[in-house]
Length: 485
Image 1 (cartoon, rainbow, N blue to C red):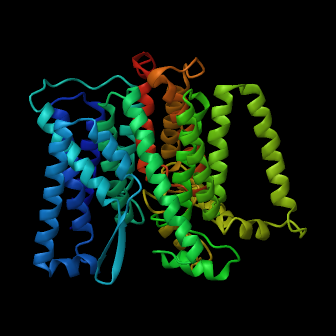
Image 2 (tube, helix red, strand yellow):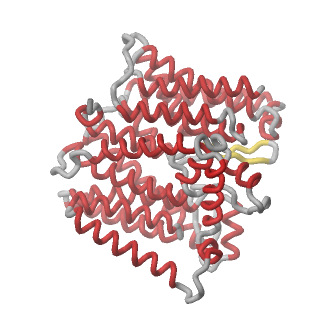
Image 3 (cartoon, rainbow, N blue to C red):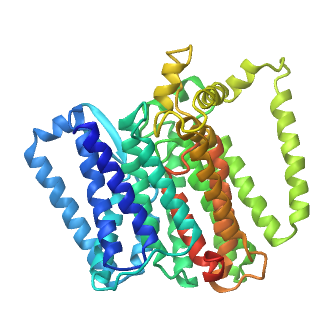
């Protein structure tokens, strides 16, 4: 596929997904979602047409037919279920969030969110059938969907001059487009107490299973996958697990978010049986987190717990405790080991992230307004740094990534999104929670925890949990908050 056609396709897919979250339920919105969900695999296929994986697949007609048949059957079956029992759609999306499927071809492996993509496609089919006869409407008045739409369109535009166009295209197609459609699907949902309780049950059961799998890995000293983590464990005095996740830090992120949700429920629960179940779940989650050795996940969890403490008890005392804890943590990091504090030592302690931050800032200084283009950090870092063979070239700090790739334009949209999202989720949340409103502190705290984790490990836009929390948070906020005008 020529870069011109690919670029045009990326813009069309991004525009369609943006329209999907701006339009109310109608035939036009259904058409926009269908266009977005059909275009993204086509664009990926065209971009990767000559890679070893696709070449190997192209020569195996039987395998292609089998995969298409399985996908069609799965989408059709799920769509029927969602159409008949609408409650299943949000539960299926939440259930599918953690799972990546390793697809092997031509000697290479790609870990893709295939179950989530199938659920989203089935959701689009079900909603299209439901809304096909609905009257067309104008664009909605809420600010958050408008900013999200602008984020997606800007990212697509900035792939056109990216130093790594293929990476930018993949980020649009694998993450932004399907997650935007998922946001649109979840925005239709009525998030009542029953559904929210079921969601907590789903993530609680999943997290318990993941911890059990991770504990088996820890006790057996044997991981299921990710050769890089397996090799690193051979050289460390500690052993990190990743359970069904590819990365121990992403596994830790998931556990920390579930722990925040469970703690929020625990703080306001009245039934003794539920209290006991939530307490047991939190104990298991702490065991799982300890086995990941993920400092970023610990910090994210503490950030989420701080938000809950501020809502449940006192904002003033929580801020004081956070300030004291932050000072103490900095002192421990700086003084541990007794050796001289140097930039090189800090960079080693941060696993090379100091160089990544400084390199990202250098890239931003060279192109401060528009950056090097979407998805370009790794390529630009290698091309514009003195050390061409740097072992780590993927940024782990979301604002630095945005500054280097998208410049001040991208950072302004990122900041606007965070401000509007936090304002929407936090307005009126200090009142006595009742019914579905009891979930608002949990969603706010989980979003803050996720935000903190992305400051240390990036992946804000690329994590589907971000989009789910935004959709649920806006839906729970109520019309008065969603439409301040």
